[in-house]
Length: 293
Image (cartoon, rainbow, N blue to C red):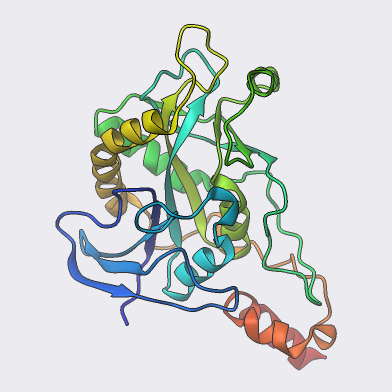
């Protein structure tokens, strides 16, 4: 089976890209279940790349039902070091006009009941999350968007809501008062899990609507979102293609070693099954400690 350095988690229509070579489709199983869909592997610009449809082919998985842990774990098992997330969002600011792009740098978590960590079951880890998006990958996406001729905003706060219903008008106004810039349903727990897996993660967000706060625009609908998202697919592909060769060969950002000092449970107390399930993530950190003990 091939490996990939770059992972792309996308919506409908972003399953692969023109010009990919050595294409193969792989179905994986993880300790956290199966991913949303089979992963398409290939090479683009000479770089291994993996495409994972977030909601499955045909968009059949609700945001609240996404197997996020399985998705991130599966990409990690393929060797992925960078994840580009592509998603549609609502704009909470007048200046972010549909169909503008946003590369956010902050998150507010309004999700409920989603499994947002690989840890538990006898092991505790606390990763730093002050910068929830990788600054290196975010900067690369922003620069590539400019080169692609897109209207793009650098930075901004992404409010992740539970869904699947859209906001009430009162909620939309509340989120605006908090200083949030865009609203969506999928950046969390993906960003948290990617950090625990020591994968660089950034979001390329397409503003498909003005949520429901704007008096001059119609209420957001699924039809509107999907229509604008489809229009943005070609732009996303151009940006991804430009981003691939711009990424460093060796990662020096904090994402790459997020677990180094995060695991606080003594190895002798971690259940063997948990060690096996998380070996892909924690094996390199436990080996030395276990030998020392």
